[in-house]
Image (cartoon, rainbow, N blue to C red; front, top):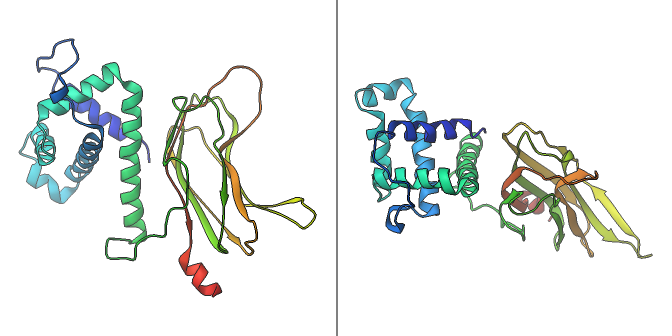
Length: 263
């Protein structure tokens, strides 16, 4: 899913409010919307934009100014249009990297909704399996690391099919060589030699869009087994360089259905 429509939407909001009066100083604290609330508002306003394009909804909203429609969404979260406008302008001007992370969280929300629609999952279904991923749910390059491949080493205590999932976005100016996700099961044999069972490797594309990566592999034995690998692996190359990437919604789950079949 691309962030371009979302960025276009925010740009449109700023253009539509360009006639409002703003000083050059930082807005007061009471005018700034907290990050979590801003993510929720942007998610809902993006969905509203999509709904207004639907033929059977145009008759409902066609006669209203689009800013009014967005203002209704913002007010439903307990904030004013002026607060939203001041917050977006502040982030665009003074905190662009933070705004980029907010965009990533909004995109993550939209991807989750898209997955629910595609799979037919909903609140009435069984709760998802426990997320076994021990690290952060998201990473940002070069804000978190310059070019760290994000190594992981996770002990496993049950056999079954393991599913590693993440939404990964490489920007076009990313400088990594051969970016990919590398995962393998590891255990030590009786002679003390490490044995590796590699999963299918996934190549990543520098197209400025989130790529939903889903990897799965079955572990037949447990004794000392571990899951190891690199979330954003790359080939080594000399010189100073940085990755420009986002990783969101990282999860590692054990397929309970697969486990039940083995019992």
